[in-house]
Structure formats: C-alpha cells, structure tokens
Image 1: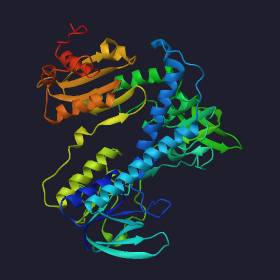
Image 2 (image 1 turned 135 degrees about the vertical axis):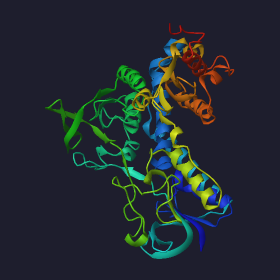
Image 3 (image 1 turned 90 degrees about the horizontal axis):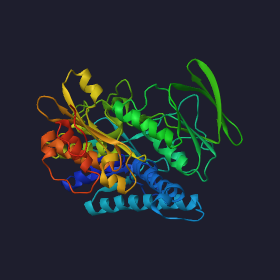
Image 4 (image 1 turned 120 degrees about the vertical axis):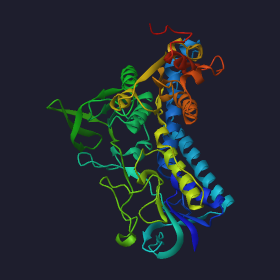
Length: 473
C-alpha cells in the first residue's frame, strides 16, 4: 500500500512524486515510456521531445545564424561555415539523456518507487499497471495523482506519417535541412520549430487559420513580433485554413483556403503544430467516478482535486495553460495538500514564453483583457533601442510594456518582446506576487548596463517619470 501513486512521470508527475516523498509519504511513480534497458524514462514530453530538445536546437540554430550572418558587424570575419546536423542532434540527445538520468537519480535519493508500465485508475483507490509484456498488476494507494500529460493534435487534412508529414516530435528528428518547410499553426510550437529550420537555411512558410497573430498575447507585442518574423524570412500566412495534404515521394502537396479561394503549395517537409490534447483516454475506468469536461480535460476544483476526494489530476490533463511550470507547481500544491498542509496556486500569474529570437514573454493581464473587464489602467513602455546593454550586444529589437491599475498603481501585467524577455518577465512576476506597484519598481536599483533596466524605465514611464525616453505630455 502506497500513500501516493502518481501516474505519469512528466514535469507535473515527477515533481509531485518527489515532493510527496520529501513530505514523508510512501510514493510510487508509474511511467509507460522506457529506455533500451526497459527502465522508465521520466521527464515526459517537455524533457524528452518538447521544451528541452527544442531549446537546444533553437540555441544551436541561433549560433549558426550568428556565425553565417551577424559576426561581420562585430569585426569578426569567418570563412565557410559547415553545418553538421547529426552533431547538432547528438548534442540535443545528450542533453536529454543527462536530464532524464538526473530524474532517476532524484527518485533514488528521495526513495520514490519507479514503476514501468501504463497506469489506469480503477474504483476504490486501486491502480492497474500494465507492463511491457501486457501483464497486469493492481496496486493500492491512499491517494492517486493523474499526470498523464498531452499529445499533438492530428487533423484529418494532414495525417502524420513520420516521413514528410510530421508532428512536433518528428520535427525534432529531421536529419537534414529541408529546402522548403511548411508549418501548420503559428502558435508557440510552430514559431519555435519554424525558427529553428529557417535559421538553418529552410524556406519556411507558416499557415495559420486565425486572422489574429498570437491572439493570446498583447496586441502591440503581437504586431511587433509579426513584423520582425517577416524580416527574418518567415512567410506567415494568416486567415488560411488547410483543407488537404498529399504525401508524395519526396514532398508534400497541400491545399488551403485563403479568403474564399483555394491555393496550392508544395514542401519537402510539413510540420503540423495546431495544438495539443490531454491524454485522458483509458486513464481511468468508467466506475472510477472521474469525469471529463466538454474538451476532454479531467474535471477538478481550484486545488486539482477531482470529485473523488483522494484522486487528483495535474498538468496538461486539467484546465489552464499546457505549460511545464504550471504542471510542476500544481504537483507541489497537491503533494502538500495530501500531506495536510495549506497550499494553493495563483493562476493569475502563470508566465508564458516563446523562445524565438528575440524572445516573447508575458505575465498577467493585457490591454484587451483589462478593457473587457472595464478596469482603468496606465501603460509604461521602453524600447530596447534605447538600452545601452541591448545595443552593445546587438539585440535592440522590441520593447518592455508594463500595465498598472490607474488608481492604485499596482502592476497588472508585463509584456516583453526582446532580449532576455523570459528573465525580465520573471523579475516582474516576483514583484507582482508581492503586490508591487510601478512606483516600487521605479524606486528599485537596477544594475547598469543590463537589459533589465528596460523594465525599470517602463515602470517609471507608467508614471511619466522615465529618464531615458520622452514622457507622455
């Protein structure tokens, strides 16, 4: 009998398991993906085929682009630059192997029992585990945490074939630079993967069904980023819906609708990145008492508790953004609540990041949301073109935008497009967790020269006190 059994070893699940064990609970973590020695491979999509490998390729491709295009301005002349895709992929895989091994080490150190197999919740707090050979075993637990993650959405007009019509996982395994690359979906995954292969030499076309680019981001940020992506060579077609695709011997031919007319294109490879769906199929039996909402997510309360008192669900299988850090924090919250501690999550302050170059990041409310809520607000902005540090490192595109309550000056949202956007937003988030005002940030000393000074100046600008740009009249 375990105190806690976690089904799924991704960022939500493995963190929940470790925290549960640290709180003195006898804990097991079930994971169906295994390595070549039939040992569970932890880390989930994020570590194995998502966040980490994509960031590794984003960094490698950025370095290649710097070497081929941007070093001359620094007075650095280089000869021919060779591209070794297998070496690039090996680096990515080595990073993944190191980190997955690290989780296994953490499990051992914290006395978490790893179980290889597929977990399924049964009635009366039982979990059925099906191992690699199909053998079933039932284990009991006082508490169960479902953290089975998500998988790429497949659409009827472009069925994955793992050859030239690829999901996000296949896009991380391309063994040579395609001359032409099509990407369906201009969301986070589509933009990041499109950026990787565009930097390496592909002619990339991104087809997005929505008319609004990055609808979830601040409109001003979205407008500026779209302009810069087009400068980088990404051909982004908005308001275009894929209607069909045909896999040929060495290419993919697609048809899409554009303002009522039908158009054709042909690509060497096609990546479909239209979103992800929760992995809730066959995760629990019908008599387990767990319910799904209309979108296929497990129904939970604000503390990730299902309608069954001792069964919880976290991460991509429940409402909210499908983000690793959101899932991890839910895992910690649930573990602490199981241990009898008071814990909760502030879902209003979950940061979002797109790791393109420049980066895009935000936290809190944007202008449209505040308008819809009839909240009066002030805006402070500062361009990186006026930042000494940004200019010195040749990364002066973009700006910081800070939004505050017009009456209280409390910071309501921070949106950044530019260098170290993710780190700048994280600084803002810490301030927001403590209810800081723009004045508080304005009175804080920022190191000079840093790109973070742009946040300082944006805070000053919100109250017409900026030093290095003109203030509003």
